[in-house]
Length: 270
Image 1 (cartoon, rainbow, N blue to C red):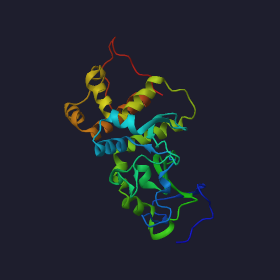
Image 2: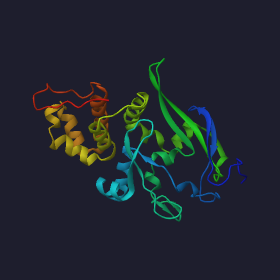
Image 3: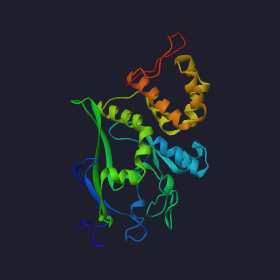
Image 4: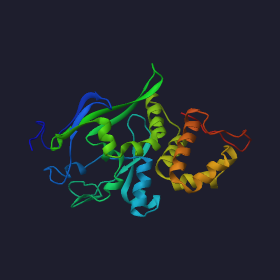
């Protein structure tokens, strides 16, 4: 198979061309490709809230156990919001902790960022049309022999082949929160707001305890049906958490506040 670029080693180029869902690409990755597994080392690999739930469940761990063993906190540079990323092994290559001889050992629940490769993904607010728009771009790395090989397909066909849409849909509101914060530009964010965002984004067990074991339900009106759902369903809890974050951080009225009393301290929004 011929190399498709004149890049070398670990050189990386983000091709400055905006791709749409109908743009055509060619890419394939399989054990026979010469560069197999080279893209699984020394990564900045952010984990979405849904990634955390899926990998945690696959490993049979609690959220606290998974976060402690396999992740580290990270501040997103544009938004200043805290998330978690996968912690690489402490070997010379800084390999992914889930990389085995035959490839990814958690392939069925691999993170969203892995599924997108070699595409990058972003979201921006089209103020003229009053809607969010997805943007895609191509990442070319010097060692990658999979680009420009295999069957031609659209970006959307590639996304579907990697199981991306069904994993992305439940966290769209989370992405919108990050995008909205980025649009504010540099600004000081109250520490309490950062803590709330990090808790909802990374640890459903702790957020559930926060809802049911603190004064949360004295401050917010939550329908009984919703309470029953979020008691046992982590994905429903996440989606409730995103709506609540939009309420307390941006002033959106998605989770109704109860009438404030002397003991209810209002959270300062962004």
